[in-house]
Image (cartoon, rainbow, N blue to C red; front, side, top):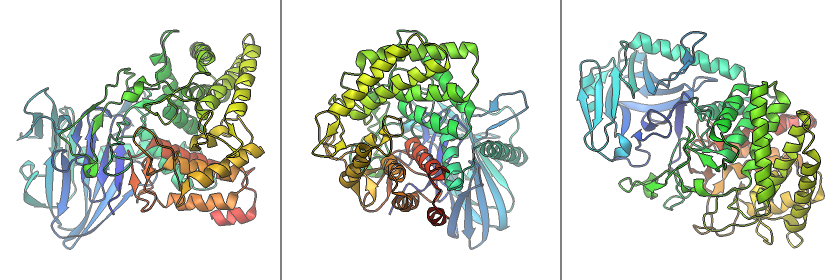
Amino acid sequence: MKNLNYGVVGNCRSAALISEQGAIEWLCLPQFDSSSVFASILDEKKGGFFTVVPKYLERTEQHYVARTNILVTRFHCLDGVFEIHDFMPRYRIDVNASYYTPPDIVRYFKHIVGDPEITLKYQPMLEYGVPGTKNVVKADYIKSTTTSGPYDSLYMYSSFDLSIFDGSKTAKLIKDEFCLISYNQKLLHQDVRRSRLKLERTKVYWLNWSERTTSFKYFEEQIIRSALTLKMLSFDKSGAILAALTTSLPESIGEERNWDYRFCWIRDASMVVKIMTSLGHFRMARHYLDFIIDILPDKDEKMQIMYGIKGEKKLTEKTLDHLGGYEDSFPVRIGNAAYKQKQNDIYGILLDVIYQHFELYSISLDHSEELWTIVRNILKVVEANWQKPDRGIWEIRSENKHFTFSKVLCWTAVDRAVKIAGLLKQENNIHKWEKLRDKISQDIHKNAWSESKNSFTQAYGSNDLDASVLLMESYGFIEASDPRYVNTVLAIQKELEHNGLMFRYRNKDDFGTPKSAFTICSFWLINSLYKIGRKKEALKKYKILLSYSNHLGLFSEDLDFETKRMLGNFPQAYSHLALIETAMTISDSELTDDEEIKEFIH
């Protein structure tokens, strides 16, 4: 079974996907949302790649250097053993400098034993492979340029003989070597020693970052790997956080549910920031809130559901018809038309993060005033729009509904605004907002509850169920012990769970009936089951779900119900933030007080 068995390396500017066999199959430069230079994951012939093929290969192994984002692929060959240490540099050159994060990927070849014979095939295809790409061997590097259309170029430096990278000759690895691929021409001489220094500096950066991450009693290794992955999804230049690194990896093979996720959704990013703040990474939260302040400079600025990673507002969607798609799942899309949608849940999720920020940290006066202005402006929008239908968390493209999750998050927006006002001693609006909060709550209890389903439903007047409703408790709308919530959890499990995994919903949408499991929803169910007291069941499900990650502990957006194959864009922020949140719930000392459960976890 083909699976998304890729490792990811990145430096908060861009990131690459590297296969179990050590091939670079996805990389966009100079940043995450740039056009690809390698995209064979979307088309093996036209996408571009960089492969390393030993002549006498027996097997490969792959792992991360512990608590870092440095990927090691170990090649066991009949004629020797070697490793490739892949990384994108990230470190401070000196204490007072900002981080050095060039648009580079370094492949450090570490000789272990013997003299393995290898073939190197370096075939970038610039600009998604739309124009032709020409490689020219210079004295110190290979320069790749577009042959038509807009000009673009790429540089590759190496200690290997540059004439072998077309795959026509082999090389024997008898000592450490390096390859460095850069969007920019390098000003300093590149050699093995300098590449090793970059490797060690990057290793130290990631080890220090991991050390600052809050430790938990259980599932520490999974939490750290997921946190490191979420960090790689952050864009340092602006503070934006991507939903995933890829575009157009399909939710179901051969279908058209293929989307570009290399953008910053307010919902997804805010959820990530809340989790990362809980793990002790305040800088990431502050940087993200600076991004929010920058994209909302004026009081009448309407907040979109998503933005480009540099704050771009127009994300025009188009298809790349020359690419065949992942396993012929067409079309390949770039851009995302969902930016035009109205989704009322984003306000509550953002204000939840702002409230956490005020509650946990000392904030400068000017920063506090900017955030308080955003809070008040958002409340005006919520007050004017909470009674209106929207497209919902799942971005239904053809229909507006009164989605329960959107209503709950409107309630959350008002609730957090009340609490923020209290923290800031701004009491003028509290009474008015408290009345609005109560009104929204009453409306939800009246219109979202179905007696026949004995559950809160997907939307007002509907009997369809929706996994997002499980989050009502997480946002404080209802207690876990409330019979209505307990019954909702059990009803959603009964209707949406299949083969141990969860549908988002089962009703038809724009593209028919959903066929794959949405990974975050499976984590949501486990979290909810644990909170309502079904701890053993939840723990069993959690350990099984963790086993469906790839060989490196990474998750995509979806899973196939039958084969458990990963599907959808990869790696997915949603999946990893939910993994961490569930592990944190299990590690909560007030909940995990049963010795039998502790024994089960260990």
